[in-house]
Image (cartoon, rainbow, N blue to C red):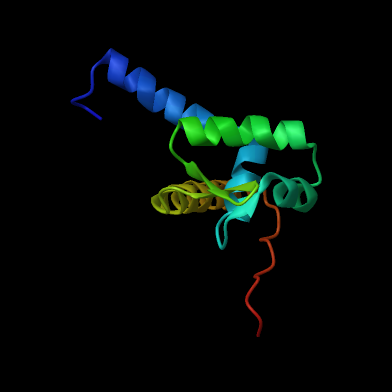
Length: 116
């Protein structure tokens, strides 16, 4: 990042801004295991087709997903699976932050998801 000029940093900020919408993150999660069309995403995410299409356009523009025609439908899939590494890194950081905040406030730790 040190070697980037202001213009390049602006592009990086736009890239991250594309991930700043919760529904876009839900769409990325829904595409984690398989390609889906707009109708499937609409049903899965319980939102309007127009909303899903708008967010898919943004994710496509920034290279997170790609569109492939199959018959009369268009299917979207992850263009670069490394986006999950980025999201997992941020989610892990957020989990640590929340745990630290809870500890500082004296809240009991969240129950572990691991089965005993």
